[in-house]
Image (cartoon, rainbow, N blue to C red; front, side, top):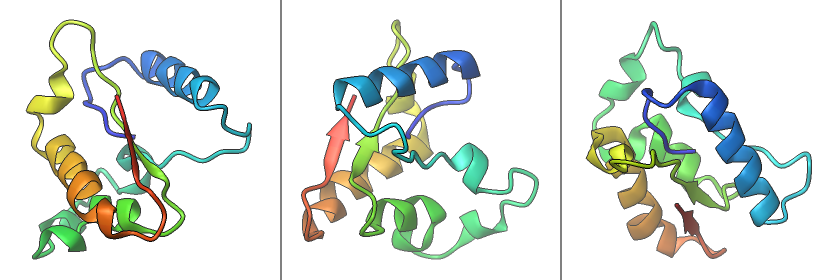
Length: 107
């Protein structure tokens, strides 16, 4: 999940549910969110050298990852202005094409 922190969490959950219904995903389908995957009080792993060494890229490039979904706000599509979100989109589109299984990018 690619999102910006200004979206109320309840709205993020609603968008996640809508995405899962529209993609006809199983009820036990998993979503990776940096909010929960990265220790927000100890972000030293984000200073890794190289884009592909970041936790974001590692999650996207994992063979189990089927794609990236961008949760956008209605007025500004703010995630497209956030550096980490743009990094996630770049990795998904550029490097995801090298994965064996087709990498999805949903907005």
